[in-house]
Image (cartoon, rainbow, N blue to C red; front, side, top):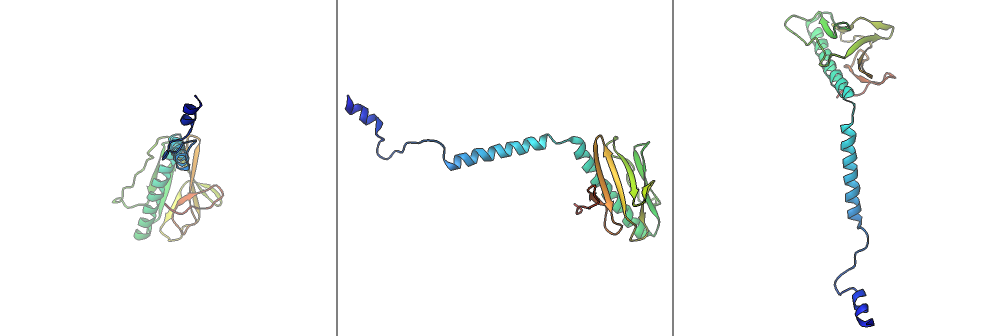
Length: 167
């Protein structure tokens, strides 16, 4: 009986016994877990933050369009938010240039800030250097600030005043 038991325990020639996982198998599992958590993190993102970023990018483009038109036409152009109506308007633009006057999301509000405090409008031209201005957008509990130093374009800024590179 000792003979057959010994044969069963001995590995056969050309076969290796497998014990545990290989490094490649572990790396694949870790990669799959990382991808799944990244997808879950993106799915859980606050929709109001995404909407506010979209509104900020759109407003920055509209402001720069109006600013360029003000310089080209040599006219004073102002951007005026209307918190009661939930909209905004461009004052002084030629009638031929009809820019949008409303937010994509009805809950967005805005206020214009200059170094001396709050003001009713943002001045966009006709001068190439317009002075430092900040526009604070709010949606639900989210807040986003667009700022210019007066020379560069409006771009997203942090709360301390540093302006991110335009995207």
